[in-house]
Image (tube, rainbow, N blue to C red):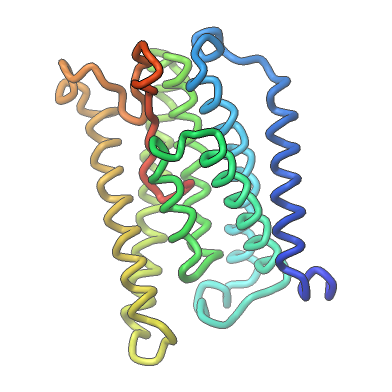
Amino acid sequence: MKVLHDHPGAVVLVVSLLFRVVHRLLQRLPVPKVVRMDEFRAWKWKNLSVSLVHSTLTGAWALSCVLIWPETLHNLHSYYTFASYMLVCVSTGYFVQDAGDIILSGHARGSWEFLIHHVLVYVSGAVVALFVELNSITLHTRLMLKLAEEQASAAYRVNKLLNLFTYVGFRLIAQAYLTWYIVRNYSWLDHAGFFLACMVAMNTMILIYFYRLLRADFCPRARRGSGALNGTHKPTSGHHHRPQMTQKFLNEN
């Protein structure tokens, strides 16, 4: 344990490589035909598959840390355990891998919100901030169902309700708590101004995405005639019109 604690950079690098291996292994799983036929959708499906693995792992991990060690929630600025330390290392390793995948694949322009989320998520209270990954499970599932054009399926209808519940319970409330904690302890927290500015930026992003989410999934009439899917854009012909997918976090984000 001491070796892992003393070499966080090496731990992050190893985890990043392990997530790359996961990325390779997931390519062996079956993919919907509509996804397989389009280059961008195929890449996004692979990317979201790895994100789903990360969200399932770290979301449950973060919640466990708080339930087992409640001090994690009440003393964000200084208290941590080996489990929470490893959680941060694992998530950082994933974010490094994911940022590399987005940039090296040439999709950074269409996924800039993911990159901003990766930068902002650790500015304060990393373990609590990772509560958002519990929502990312349903959020990634939603996007994958959209890629497969399954918006009319029972799975999508059930998932959109679960997504609403987890968005409020594990994303909005977690962000509100972190913001409240910084404001309440602003007078003595180191770099409090920087942390608060980052939280305001993150809060703005997730509120905008929450509005878009509600509009797309629960007020579909408002989107008629737009020809767009929230979170995805249908492919257009030509190499100069690469379809873009955006996801507001984070999360995830």
